[in-house]
Length: 146
Image 1 (cartoon, helix red, strand yellow):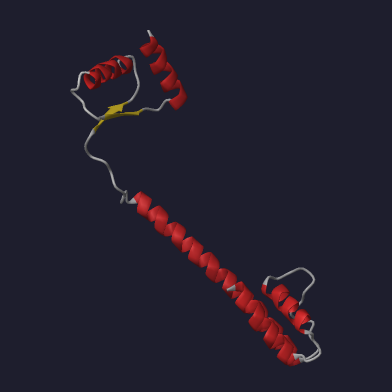
Image 2: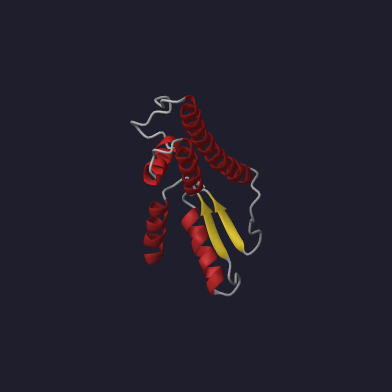
């Protein structure tokens, strides 16, 4: 989109001011569209040149605003989808253990024994707790090593 606007702007500027080279016209269009430092849309000697450069400057602002609007809209859609909890939840084939306390490790040992004995084939155990994951792993591995 930006390249198309630069080419269109360069052609418009070149047609409005025959003294500009093609390279200068494209660079001026690029600078006006991107509001580059040192480029002014009001320093044109003719009224038509001023109108063309201001139109190109405003086109650059509108194209940037459009892109920001599209990106913002996609973020809003993604956030709304997450907040609606409109995603797939696995409802079977796992055990959820909520919180971590002194009974957690014994319960996990019993679940491990049940899995080893074939009572819980392929079940996954999920622990939801307000503890650090590394700490829970370390505590579990220490208990299992004994």
